[in-house]
Image (cartoon, rainbow, N blue to C red):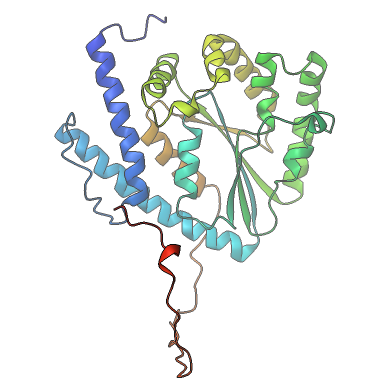
Length: 307
């Protein structure tokens, strides 16, 4: 275990407890619509400063999500096409920020591509082929939860590709991304950076949280053992694929909430969006017909009201 990891059991349990509270906050985000964020203070184990920080977080989250709706409208109105890549170690927080970005957007406009491991047939295709199928049409944003950079990361570290395939990837990816940009697709690449200690704690939290144990796969556990190999692969990837046409942006992600807000704010700054005027919405009067009579629903069709 790294010397930087907390040795004191009380300190470790406190950090795990705080992580659990942060996870509860994630669920609260789905329910809270009031910008005053009721119900976000007064929980055990939280100081007044913690509560203020949480209220600030929710306020900024809602503000940024409101701006993302304006961005979405602008993308549709202008026919803009956007691809956003989210890369990083396991438990770095990629899924969390993707959830906050898409949470209040139209899934027909802003969609997520999270591809599983390639099939036998896909492994025989051009490497980028299965990703091309998910590229946006006019007026769409596509968020890749991991991307073609799997070859530079997990495939390299776990030995799922040959040395020749690895080198061919680095020869091809700059040209592939140049083609995307020349075609009018805006490409934005984020790397979420966490420390050795923070990944260790997040994995422990997943082990002890029944609602999140499904996130911890055997591949995740193996990645924990191969931390240094992943670090070398990341360094090579950033060095060889950071180009003027498609640069990388590194998000400091040890603090999950700050990482989400910083990434969302940065994303908004990458496009010259403006608020799009919409015609006023008028609710039409419901039409009534004298000859229509609503039929009763058979009782056996109703879901039992347990609650």
